[in-house]
Length: 168
Image (tube, rainbow, N blue to C red; front, side, top):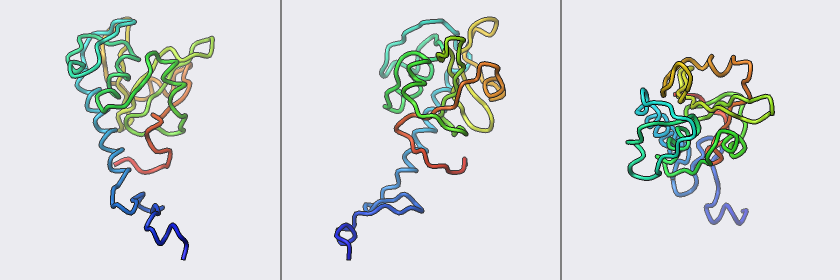
């Protein structure tokens, strides 16, 4: 018998449960739900370019966001780090073909850098802080970013699994 099998150290390919019975995918889905929940609670808050809100327990009470500050705070609400700025966030995350709730979508400028980020919340909807005539955190169809001429990519936080699984 293999030594690792005798010690009970293995990971099930089907359920991703190690010998302790701990389900990492369940933990990930809870964190994804927390990211989305935080984003939803920010709907309607004003947009302010370059704003820096204090991280921590007061973050749900931030009065304004820009796009990257919103995604940064969504992840901070789950105790996951996210760098400041859309381009830094795109570089930090891993590219994916299809988003899951909590994944990020990026728009790319002419210089090839991400200058806007939105949070995929499931059911083909995204939430983002948008300036201009909108001037607030709003929810819209993912078509806004997915079909945008400057669409760059969908990306996933490095703490989340790259394995495909169905959205609930």
